[in-house]
Image (cartoon, rainbow, N blue to C red):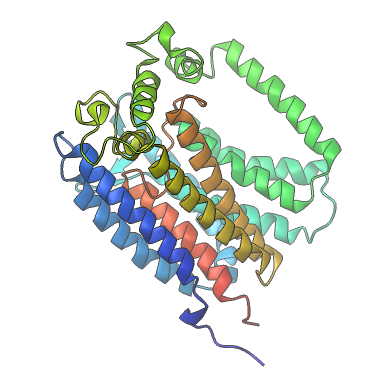
Length: 365
């Protein structure tokens, strides 16, 4: 007997946790920017979140099997959008990442993560669970690698790196074996080493950003400045924090971009170890809920979609928090649902909408 689709199957506890995180984000953006030129950005963030919620509900209503059927068209449109950025993109600080539409700037590289999640899910689901060949693996690398290269030349290394966990999750769930994994690790290490030494792939400032976290005191006013200020902010928060709008690093305008890339540092200064731990616990609960939904999906494509979402969110959380506490290089990767930014917020809600989409159809046949 066919069961009708109903919003009673919507994951309301997951949405509740997401909205709690968004509320924390709005208050922290308000606190971090109240005396800066970014004052008022919390209002824009509210509109981004509201738009994201609407988009999530709408996206969850479209059968994900239909979305998978349209993946080739989505993928082609994504490549055209990246080409358009290269030609017509708005240049900021030496990088072309946005297309300017007047009151709104569109960043295609953020949205392409969702398309790649669907594309990788479709690709590995169509293999039918058979043993992966090197040809299969090569095609998967090309599928993700082509848009990744187009984003790297913008240049936007941070966003390009977020495509990697989608590929890794697809290969892992698609059935890659240990021998193939080891070969890829060795080849990947050799390529990274070659790219580092060649001087043609990474620009000097990118190398400086990737290594400055190891010893930021070597260049405290240059490449190490952001890491040093972030560490000072987090450390000065102590156990309980200094209180809302009382962070000396944040309110004193020492902490760079406190409403976006370093919002976790600003939050840590104001709310301390306890507040930071509770936010990380909230992230953990969201990810565990998503994994549970992947386990109850009706089919392999559905599980692959949700795990692709989990892979991207986990990567972004780990890299951003690691960057803030000096364990990772500064890459400009936003903290999901916390950092300010329309493209990032809307992508995250659409990705959650894709996960909700799969969950709502687990009993529909």
